[in-house]
Length: 124
Image (tube, one colour):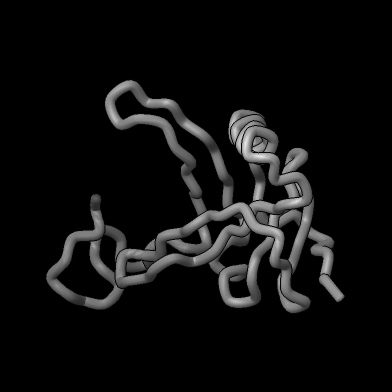
């Protein structure tokens, strides 16, 4: 059975909610949910992926965020606590979704440095 989260982990802005619901409607994907997941990781933090899908597993956690059904797998949930999803339409960079998660940022104790101690730059 799906586990419904008691605490809302992810917030979805009204702009993002409208964009997601418009995509679901235009593509006739009623009953689909927004899956948010860790797409890749590294010493500078993680990046996230999102997909609309209707394949919800029993170990997934689901909740409603501003009118959007959100699904998160058991591995990604810890990286998404306190995350905020927004939709921006930047004239220079284009339109798209942004996931900002304080749980996924680099180690704040090493401010300005990579947590792996490598030679990469985490300031991008």
